[in-house]
Length: 190
Image (cartoon, rainbow, N blue to C red; front, side, top):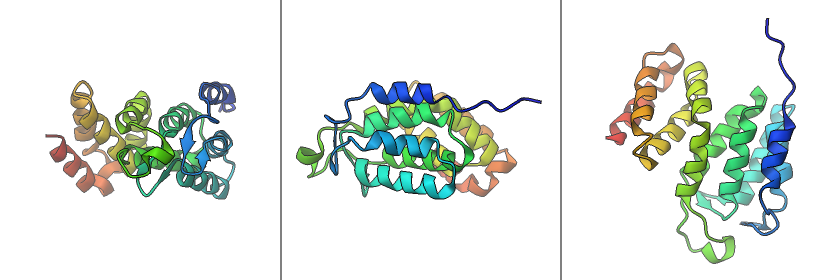
């Protein structure tokens, strides 16, 4: 029997410290409040706490698909934190990553929210590829399909691997409820 280990807050704290949150722009001005929201989401003890943190990040870093300058830093931190996140947070973190990955960076608010690259966000997301693959296989998480799809569309180098994972997922009982999504994602990769 494997004994569960305590979450390693050090990895997330080190990643949070790499970013100048005061200087990064968001839809609320600076992104200074995001490190605490990210920490609250990653280490939430209840679904309600995870949900509150999710919406704080969502309503600060992006709004209705529009990304702000802090999004690449948010993605890097969420990918690092996902490794140690409890079950109550994991699906919300993955959903938030998929939402950011599907966002757009060219909008009228660019002067206010700073420059941002959706490509940069997706590249940072790709670091967690194995985690999304595992979540897809074990839990049939539809947001993992979205993230993997974006990684495949963004990188010709990752495309064969993404196709393989999605094809294999079609045969899994956990992915049967999302087989239409997987099939349409595979078709759109061509």
